[in-house]
Amino acid sequence: MNTTWSKRMSKNKPKYKKINNSYFKNFCSIFNTLLSIDTDNVLSNMQEASLDDNNKKKQFYLYDGKLLNMDAVKLDDMTEPFLQYMKKERSLNYFEQPHAVDAMCVDRDNEWFFIEFKNCPIYKVTSEGQKYNSEVLSSIRQKMFGSLWLLFTLDSFAHKGLFGDDITEYARKHFTYIVVVSRDKNPDEFRRIHECIGNRYTPLYFSKYVGYYFKDVYLLTEKEFASFIKNFKN
Image (cartoon, rainbow, N blue to C red; front, side, top):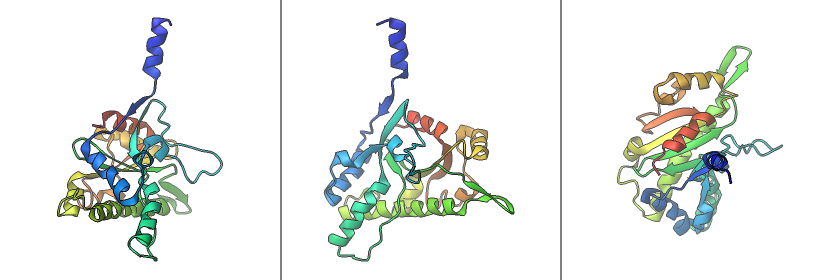
């Protein structure tokens, strides 16, 4: 094969980052010991997690992962097995399935990341002008708190002790919530992201959660999300 062509093919070959640190592995083991889910079925990737479930006509991934992809737990996929566990093992027949984010991961510095993908506008046009899409923001908040509760409950039931004695303080020090939105459907947010240092834009409607429930909360588009994966300390 021509050397130049070989280098070009190697450069364009998709890269995949596996997360092998003990923090992530210890958390993933909970699903095996508590919910009897094989490790292979716990692990997914960021591309799969970004699948738009609301698009019934065709499969659409907000993050295509063609050049760079990474391990992740599709936390929302774990809520159904958890529901069955609560009913069968805890005899809570009226327990409701919790809401959770699309993806989560933990880096080697013990920083935890909740990631929610939204292939829709954050704003909507009304007769009174442009306003925040209340349904979208409500969904983001619901998954925010549902995910925290789910992780802390799983840890408690599995007796892992991953989060110490004060779980809320632990979240404020180690948990970050990232919402990944479509660049094409949110041009104003895309512009604001690139006006911020490090492309970390925290909209006003997220700022109240910073330092109260989470270490950080910010918005990215699928374009900046590739940089997040690239810089992730796996």
